[in-house]
Amino acid sequence: MSISKRIAELNRLDDLIIYRAICSCSQEKHDLTIHLEKDTEFDLLLLTFYVNLSIDEYFSLWEKDNFKGKLKKFIHILWIRIKLSLKVLFTGYIEIEQEFIIDDKDQIDSLVKSLEEGKSYLNIE
Image (cartoon, rainbow, N blue to C red; front, top):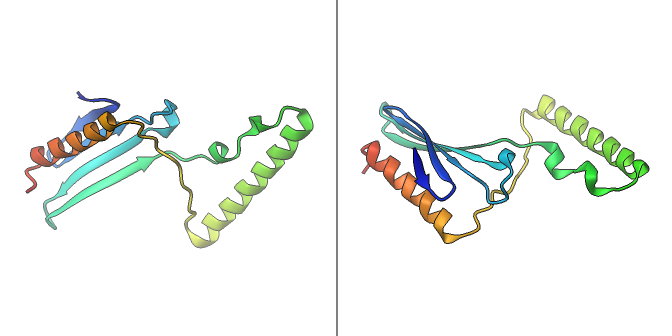
């Protein structure tokens, strides 16, 4: 079911509504999945955002034109991946950020409208 501009409802269950927000850059990898959930046991409203992150988004191989530049960049990316993997192994987490672009008022209004609709469906006051 569609809400409106680049916001879609994916699934609706008794205590959970799932939305998909599409990034204005139009890359599928940047889509945002939003869970609006009512926890009746603890009387909580849970709003959870899910996004797929990848290292290649930060360190693109295509920034250099020649083979030597691409090889150097590849080794650099590999080294960063090893460092991040070790950090996850020893600390349990890493911090990565990724942009999600909302480029106009209509998309913001659509997101707010979908959350308001979900709030109403879940009977949250």
